Length: 336
Image (tube, rainbow, N blue to C red):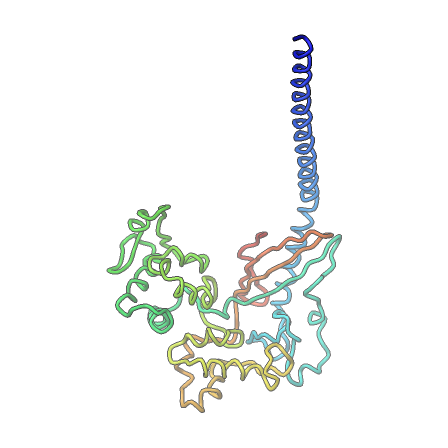
């Protein structure tokens, strides 16, 4: 009996030892993981200021490039220009001695212990959802949204209710009372959209992914209002009343020059919206029908800065508003 109890005690003791060993292993593993996380946080904290300065330096480079234009291009923004990553000049001007600013790099710019790259995109290459006239919105919904004609007013009224400052719903619209019944509930914006993704909250658009996709791909919430005919894509131009995909494609190909590639030295950017008349003439169309929507300059630019220190990278996004070459304002700056 005594022998049997001794064996039993030894078995229990072994189990207890194994539990203690397992517990210690968990504790040690957790401690090691915690130390690794803390080291990583300490590393990130150490380089946070450097990363931020790289990001801000990228924005300052973008501001500088946007303040410069080649001679004869003072009233024009196009994809062949330096800010857009193009060669800088077109035609015979491409043979001229480049200015110092035209030789500045936009990628892998060395600074201190790191480097940064920038990408500048003008917002005027898209339609503005906040300032687009109601007839244009109606036309786009009717022609591209696959929506029943009887339901178009629901989209129009709901969008205007979302943007206008009051809580009085239009006949087919929706205000906060309607959205508070959603799950989760939310209020009507009663102000301009800050980002095109807000359309996902607006009555009608939130239930029509196909229509939302049309607007998300071809509209922006922040721009000067007019479309830059030198940077807009054929699908965006094709949304204008009276425009066809064929004509929109020809407008884009005209500015691409003989090689058919946009952003090369043989580009033929439009100097004024009237110049699209050369493309429209064979179709018997008057360019004045589109002038109310078009421009050849851009005023709002998104800057994407990729900062790098060692193997770590961080992306920053900034929005710039160019009031004049001497006055380019930073509307926001944040890391992703």
